[in-house]
Image (tube, rainbow over all chains, first blue to last red; front, side):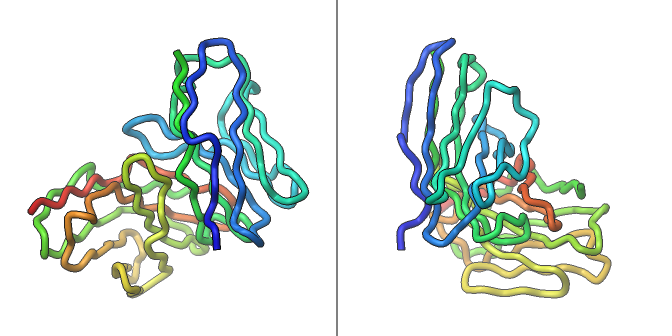
Amino acid sequence: DAGVTQSPTHLIKTRGQHVTLRCSPISGHKSVSWYQQVLGQGPQFIFQYYEKEERGRGNFPDRFSARQFPNYSSELNVNALLLGDSALYLCASSPQGLAKNIQYFGAGTRLSVL
Amino acid sequence: LAKTTQPISMDSYEGQEVNITCSHNNIATNDYITWYQQFPSQGPRFIIQGYKTKVTNEVASLFIPADRKSSTLSLPRVSLSDTAVYYCLVNTNDYKLSFGAGTTVTVRA
C-alpha cells in the first residue's frame, strides 16, 4: 500500500506570493494533520482535519488555511509568504487522528521563500 | 499538556546499545508515551509506544518505571543507519502531536 504522499517535494517562492501544498493520506485514513518544521527544530502542529472538518489549529496566523476533500486528501494554503515561512511542511495521516494513535508522515514539501 | 525533557545529543558506536531517557514529570493518567525517529529531509516515523512497564518490538524497547515520570528508549546494537533525531512525546486523547527538539543520535563506525 502507498504511504502518505505529498506534492510538490520542493518549491521556491518569493515573498508575498501564495502557495498550495497537497497531501494524500493512506487509504482508509480519515484524518490529515499538517506540521511545519523549521531547520533544527521539531515539527510544529498547524492543522488537523478529520472527516472533512477542522478539528484543531495550532498557533499560526490566518495566512495559513487548509481543507480536506471528500476523498480525504488535503491542501495547505499559505498566503502572503514571508521569509520565515521557509520550512519543511509535513503531512500526517491516521485512521482517527488521535495523538495516541500512530501518525504516518509523508516525506514533506520543502518550501523556500526568497 | 505534559512537557518532555530529553538530551540534546548522544554519540555511540556501531554495535553498541543506545539508551535515551525522557523525563515527563507531569504525565497524566491517560497519557501514553510515544517515540518517533526522523532522518534528515524525511517525516518522523513511529518507533514504539507504551503506557507502563516494558514494551518491545523488532526495532526497540521502551522501559517505563512504575511512577511513569520518565521513560527510556533502548536501541540494541545500533548501526550507522540509526543516526537520526529521536523524539519522545506524551499523548493523551488530544489530536495533535507536540514535538520538542528531540535527541540527535550519532552512530560512528
